[in-house]
Image (cartoon, rainbow, N blue to C red):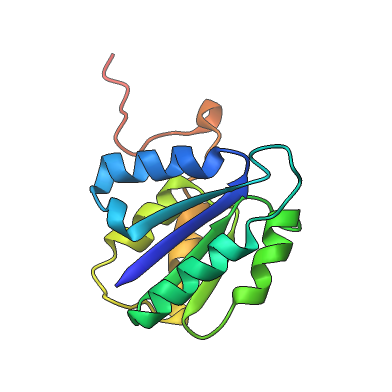
Length: 138
């Protein structure tokens, strides 16, 4: 099974988890871990380690999604990368949805790369976007 752990500064992770559950009803596959939530400047290493061990014991594929490249959250998370644990930064809703809704039980590295590329394509400046479905009927 694919598992997503969203780790972000403050409560962004919780909001993404809520939205993902709304669209997928897969809350059992999504874990949100807000970092620095209580202004105590403590990173939740032990909580993350515990979740990873739990998921690995079930032979789950783990995707840890973080918010900022080079940010402290991402730096702390990089130590968890391995053959069955992917760390992806710059989390957005299309990325997480694509992972969860992928028809494959496990994603290969190439499939993960494709999901990341497709999620990047979802970031669009709508002021200049010409929808392929919009036609000027007047």
